[in-house]
Length: 199
Image (cartoon, rainbow, N blue to C red; front, side, top):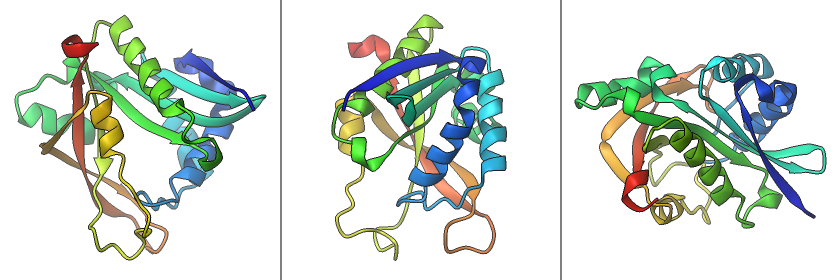
């Protein structure tokens, strides 16, 4: 099975939005996200990214099927929840390229696709003259009842990509977990890489 990685700018990914919506809902059901999503919300979310000048969609294809996706956009186009911790710490959101998510069906993991997702988004950041890349990751307690016994966080992979954890940069996103009746805020913290340091 041969995977093909393609990058699309903004609305260029529009023909794949329904595929991307289903992919996000499927992958984000797993720990640590436990996201109980719906297609209507996902379409709206993806359309917002498509409208962002400078955004990128890096997609993984198995034939005609989208099996993975990663998004990125200048942080200046992101929501207040994303920008607020940077502004509060004296950092200019306009200096950063923000990674929205990286999702891949489980059967395709361990084949270097995650690295390609990072490379594609970092290339877009450089194209825009943004040398600081960042993303945030949800934090779950070690004793969370849905935490799989064999769960391994991606911290090591992110460090190997040159990203440093900045636990002082924190925000909250609101969504409904699989076992929740309504949405609740979830804590997230940021990771940052300066592409000028070693890239």
